[in-house]
Amino acid sequence: MLKRHLIFPLLTFVITIAARAAEADGDAVIRAPFGGSEIVVTTTARLAGAIHSVTWRGREFIDSADHGRQLQSAAGFDLTRTGNSETFNPTEAGARADGPGPVTTSRLLEIHAAGNVLRTLTQMAFWLRPGEKSGGQPAENTAPLSAHRLAKQVTIGPPGQPNVLDYAVTWTVPAGEAHADAQFEALTGYLPPEFARFWRLDPATKKLGPLSDGPGEQRDPVAFSTADGAYAMGIIAPEPAPSGSTGPGYGRFRFPMEKVVKWNCVFRVHPADGVVPAGDYRYHMLVPIGTLADVEAALAKLAGE
Image (tube, rainbow, N blue to C red; front, side, top):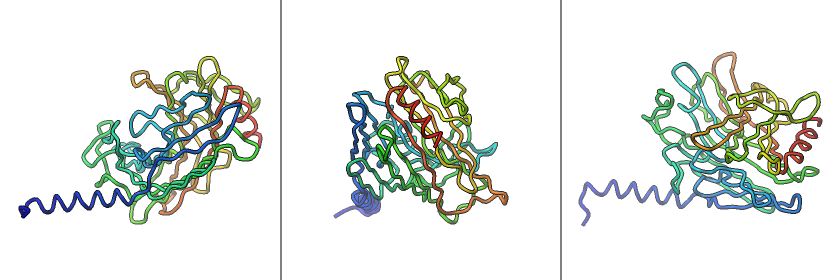
């Protein structure tokens, strides 16, 4: 017979295991041919369906070290002097505390992968656990798992763009939360340090030129490449910011100690009445992959269109 004080912990454990068993299996692969090879995109259950790997010609483009360094999406709310982008930060792949471990606090609700198309629906974890701090500021969330959902659709090689990831995301901000502003990191990519050259697309010439380390955002699409230009990845948001949003801003960051580089595509919502409406926020990005020349040509074409 179980001692009484063991019943409730055991019941909680059983409920947790049952909930995890009901989640979708996040291990999936999509692929499509390009340049005599294949672009291969891989997701894992460890990251709740966030993109763990992008390869082409045997080269890995993503540095998936923990539960933040992926090709993924996140959002920050209520950025003030007492709060930063991580203090209320729903994150697709999981939480900071998940670290390099095999499980994630995020929950994958749906996944479909066939051919060159991936679709997922994720209930996002907060990056910080309640009681944790970022930059000296305490977490504003009171639970490890948010009520925010992220739906994404990724297509490798849409018509006429064989080396492009067509990447559409939709956040559902739940009712019942009061936020004064929102910062949607619609997409970020963490790349190995070998992608050491930063580039920006000149809007007049449609050519890539060198971009400083910054760090931070600027308004032109960016690309990162290896020193020899044999491998590169870029980012462009081809449509105007949706009504109520500003952006995109394209960021670039180099983290020498962590041996990783990062780009992102960011949109912001600053309502005049100081209240971010609940509901859906959709953003569309295109991510060209290939040699630096391939990426420059794709960005120039996409910017022209």
